[in-house]
Amino acid sequence: MRPTLGWQADGQVLRRVRLERRDLRPGDLAIRVDYCGVCHTDLHSLGAHTGTAPLVPGHEFTGVVTAVGSEVTRFAAGDPVAVGNIVDSCGECAMCRAGQENFCHEFPTLTYGGTDRHDGSTTLGGFSREYVVRERFAHPLPAGLDPAATAPLLCAGITVWEPLRHLGVGPGSRVAVAGLGGLGHLAVKFAVALGAETTVISRSADKAEDAAGLGARDLLVSTDAAEMATAGNRFDVVIDTISAPHDLAPYLKLVAMDGTLSQVGYLGPVTVETLDLLVGRKKLSSAGSGGLPATAEMLAFCAEHGITADIELLPSAEVNEALDRLRRNDVRYRFVLDLADLSEQATA
Image 1 (cartoon, rainbow, N blue to C red):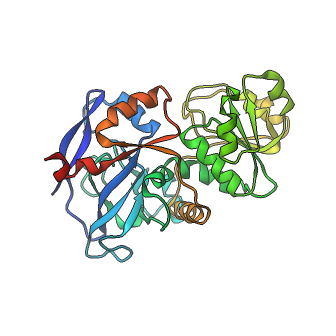
Image 2 (cartoon, rainbow, N blue to C red):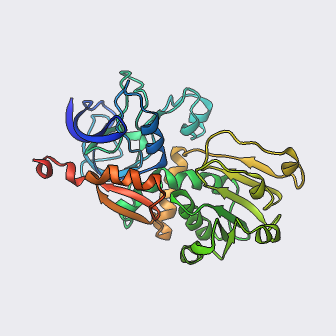
Image 3 (cartoon, rainbow, N blue to C red):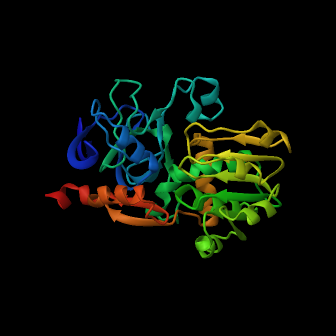
């Protein structure tokens, strides 16, 4: 086994502990984790943690390969890499064959809180100094992209990239993004770079300057009934990144004929009036994470267009403070942890 240090749940807080990673299998990489984003999923996992299995969060990270298994061909020690929230899948079902490993019929192995398909152990996430992963589920980190600001692309980024691409967003498209947080600000950057006329939907006009800075042409205030009515049937695609429970009806009313509301923020139960879909043949869709081909495409697109997340970089020792601030939505727009303080020299 390979010893390392990480942040593991102890009740509802994370404490620094010594962890063990598996010895490398023939197709594995050992990665020194340098930067790991902090996701709302980490909050949910911590809140639901019962203590029956170890919990080390973190599923969007970048780092450097330190060792490779005997059958690895795509990477060598020293290569910069990026890893997202899926680290294995069956590889044989229709979804895996289609490059949608995120929808694996046997359920994908998650970066943390998952079950290793070989030895049945619980996967431990990227809030640690080392990670061991199958070569297939690591991506080369494109040159020129800041590794810290790239980390959130591997979860927040791909979550909004897949629906934008699937829905054919491009020049001439009219796109609205509801919620300007970790997912939302990347959805705006992607939509603008894809050539769409892009609008931000926010609860107040306070985000107008931020929206313009991200390239949005307009800001729509969701609490202003007159504004919302004026924008009725205006958008081909509405990407809803709001993470709290909310009524979808006002957002469906913004969707143009044959357009789509893609709801990717709140993953709980929702209620929809059929008439809100019927009038205009509107569609309600969702998406989660992304397959390996789409992730590779997104990273290449980001390298071409210079897109990364807007982040606040913190030493990993401040992870509990980051989680507390995330609960209060006190972040603009994504926390990223610097794991350098988990090196043996830094903690000696």
